[in-house]
Image (cartoon, rainbow, N blue to C red):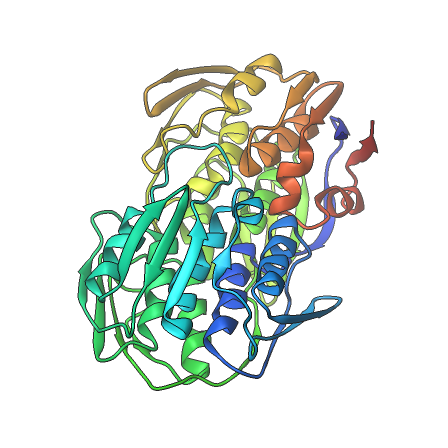
Length: 417
């Protein structure tokens, strides 16, 4: 079992380069299922989830080649339409193969997904949308079995905003007969990146980044060469790292426009955030002020930054309130922060943080991807040493985070027990 050990109290300073976005890379790699020939993707991060999706594509019959941050995928000779439980159970994004397989092969059998234990994320909206497009879908023995001779364009309304639902149906609709309209669609930069990729492949998609996305089906798609956008959540995490350590960090290779809500809240806390030609400079030279935050779908404050921002508020002067509106179980990290001395009270979807109390190092356990990042941040700010177990979670979404932090002056190392 691997652990990460953090010795707190060291100011971070220097330059960090942001990796490609996991949540953009996953659907873009999957979109290769819609084509024949070699697709080329660069700036792909080396993460557990990326390795899982490459393994899944390989099991479906794809040829996958990787050299550093470049991944080449050829799905000309698919051999299977089934995504097995053994792979899908570890990562929810595996369900993204459902739409492309159905559109390309007319058949898909995909295990019900797993992933982080942060609350129910039902895929009923994926299924409902595909059924509206003419698919015959059944749920048997833990698998989604979908069949369709040909998908038809449909006018689909999402009852709640769903990123993977928008991506899944958008990919399926590229090869459907007629026009598909997705209403109340997700607006995240990762959705826009997928739409841009599909358009480069010959799809006809308009409205990506707005609540209404229109897809006109085409007869076929061609391979593409794509650069993965930078990871906005990794960027936000390093912004918080500067804040909790009183640091001065230049964050290069990021896209500030994707982080407007986070930048606004970080600035409200008293931290200086300056946009520079190649990224951001984040400097904390003052007492952190308390700020209230409510997570909402993009372009609002992202749920994936809630745990990290909570650590910042633990160090702030005064009382702050965080409201989590996306996932009902996303305060699992609170009990671990409390072990480190944080004063946090949770009632339903609301967490009240009394800041200004020093954090102290302690043995803690990561419970999901973003909780892992929050515990590392807390360890950087704490007095003494923090030992974080179950760190395999963080390897799902952060590329070499301990190495990047160490280059900024953190005392952090990974051990294998």
